[in-house]
Image (cartoon, rainbow, N blue to C red):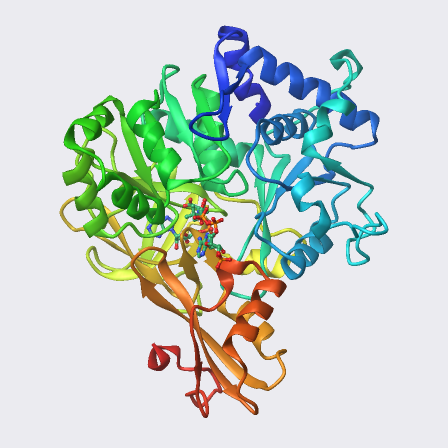
Length: 514
Ligand code: MLC
Ligand code: AMP
């Protein structure tokens, strides 16, 4: 079976049922697609893409915001085994150049508003840093123009072990790496979550998360499609609009990152008890992608009566651990392994080979095994090999780099941070070295270290410590950072210091900066 086969079952069972409803604001009318309409459009687009030369195994980069066209294009690509490479719409040249150069896509699908980042507005030529592999740049707004009769579609065999998605993730070592996600791996997460969270065809998922990450795409869209449920897709999270929809709409499920819950609590504070009572029609609020503060968990419970279900996953593994749907959901914990997932906590060391398990209750590195685990990093056999270790029985375990502890009584897992210095801000990963490498290119900056600092809304934000030969104007430096990389990576503060504390190996002692 492949992903398309699973998603297409509701098309056979309930063709006229609403699969996707897209709205751009509280007063905008929804654009609704039945299961039949959605999949028929995807088939026509698949035929059109194939007629333009796209073949199984070739990459299609998606640089676009949430829209029905995005979903249709994804279903078209998956239909005949081409590979989707989703990219964050906040990325700018340095990130785009790296990802596109690495995955060498045949086509790029983008929105008209993002096109100037890829194509020179004056000449209409693609920027010279785009890889030569790029044959066409297609606009989401014009995709319907290339649809063809689906009878023209020639379907190759698409197997569960074929690649479906290459998703770039910051990781902790070096530039972002393309995690190779097969159909089977994505199916493993979907089938585990369908059972674990009791997904029903009657569910209506309010989806405000971006489709370019695992949380929005796999936990959200894929599960809703496979369940035969309805996705209420929105362009992005907007505290005002989302609050109105939750209080007055028909959603039953809502998935978010902790930053969104913090903002929702602010918005709900202005609402009356009677208004908030409408939330009792919701069946499930989930949180993931970053730690949910116990204070937010508790404040949400007091405000709404709902206990958020926190779960833990990664780009490389899909979903791993989850609090139970029908059992105690514990603040500060990510629960138990999902069906089909194995988890171990081992001694946290960098020389990772055949490490022993820690005793229950002790902290160590979390290792994961199961059909949900990825197939390695694209074009990076050495990094792929380093991401796994093998136990005495010959089983391969993925090294998450997350520190965890298992409660001796309940068996629930808690996460205690990361082994390396990845920053997670509002659910987006920020790799400090990428910012450090950029900062030292700025005139007058000789050395730089970037550290994650606790932040009530974002979870963490980056701050930079810089050693200068000439002290920069902070506003200019900030503008320069935003011009060169996604703005969420721009340090919130620049601290000018005479030197950075380093150990004997020359490694910056970041805990001292913190
Ligand atoms: C936006 N901004 C951020 C930010 N998102 N800053 C820090 N961290 C973030 N995450 C900044 C922008 O750069 C901009 O800055 C300003 O906020 C306004 O931009 P915006 O686009 O209007 O922001 P907003 O829409 O409010 O976005 C906030 C958010 C968004 C929380 C809704 O970040 C988001 O959708 N996060 C979800 C990420 C996600 O889905 N992660 C899943 C990863 S998968 P300025 O200064 O230029 O104005 C994964 C596996 C798993 O981790 O387990 O799920
Ligand atoms: P990504 O590489 O974007 O997939 O991010 C994966 C990382 O997000 C994990 O390795 C964790 O560090 C973090 N993460 C995901 N879910 C949670 C959670 N519920 N609590 C804490 N951290 C989480």
